[in-house]
Length: 311
Length: 311
Image 1: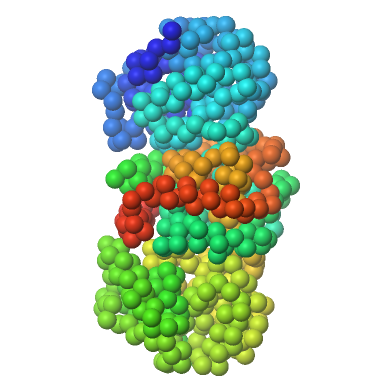
Image 2: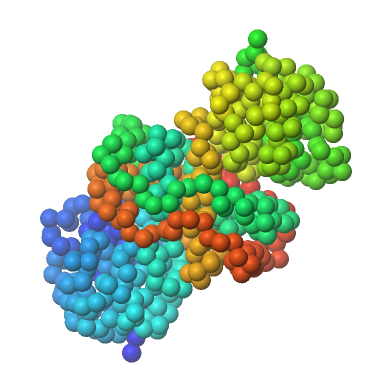
């Protein structure tokens, strides 16, 4: 018998990177007890640093009653990490040869009524759950980085996932303060990453062709479509921009333009010179700022944008 | 002898739609005198309503000294509209068969030292200027909707454009309070629209395939990548997200994923059922809200996001 999504108190977070650390901070901020699994205890200092950085922003957004970083247990023993857990958020490295054996083990260690969610940003759950003996409760719960701030969690199952597991996860994430989006189909890249990826490939093509620098790309987005997209998405942005005619006017008027050669299609070859242009361009934009400074600046502003969009 | 970009006092705005009206409001808010050309005086009420809506937000951002809606002259006589003008911003309908004859006339009516900028979101200046007798000073100055709020102006010339005209326009827009982006090449869709278009095509594919509704698309963007994109763009978002390794780590780690089938390539067929799904989805999201309410809500929030990004 599965516990009510609203009654969950103890969760497990697997992974020491920005996603695993970010989820850990988020769950702690919402008042959960968190059992964190790291591959090696050598990762503990970096892991704790991620949580401490996140905590600054989470405090500004507002902590749940009883929320504390003291409600965290860190271990490199997977069995201990899942003892007494009521939900598992897995953020292991993005490789099937790591995730498949992990789910084979989790499928035995974790009682079958407990949901196991993967943070994977692109691997299909059908593949991840292939060697899991109890795949019905394994789902994708894909966050956006930084996962302690951006509310989106994309939810989708694999072929062996039970629909009830997806229902439960939707309610759980919503209760925890996220904005869950249940996908209609299992498609590579899900919805948000796929949209972002279309844009990203086009950006790489522009840099590869000498049409724009990374700075041009970022300025074009920041001062152009992105602020509007943060508030309205893209469908409603077009709907409202077209005035009384709305989306119908947009499609009827600009439909033919869909056939124009705007955007290229296949991914560009990631040549050394393209790689260099991207890396150099970002380093120039970063200037003297450390990664910690840039991440803190990003988070400070995202907190404000989230508040603007909530009003 | 071209006037200094910092000394311009009188500009002409051509077009009664959201872009022409938005530019007019913007220039008025920055203290310019504006001569507006409408195709028909029947358009005046709608045109004035656009300006009044924009004014609310422009006041919040802050008006320049002497800025007033009284500094506006409206006419449907093109010759009168360009009399004494020092800059022309053209936002006529997005059709070559309208723009080409217009530039043929403007090329004679407007003294040759005055810059004429087109708001076109996709037509190449090389084509627009084809019948203009004085094409050296004709450029693209492409804003983003709403042009009174979003700072981006993409600048690019056609084959017959003088480099000096582009230099002047860059300085003029910057002085006027915009964020000009000078394109390295004349490519269809420029930079920002092209990026947005890549994302938009992918969104249409998802709706066409029953993978996501328009609401799914918008929620995915608003709660996922868009707030971050508004602050960092996309290159820096990846750079900072990857921590100390930055963009190099991003490309090395996710480079192979570029070859995965994320995003489809050609534009989807705009079938009746896709059109209906898009239109119905937007109408559902809009609910009871009028277009005026939704535009005002968008503007109120964009003002705040712009302030967040400025801090």
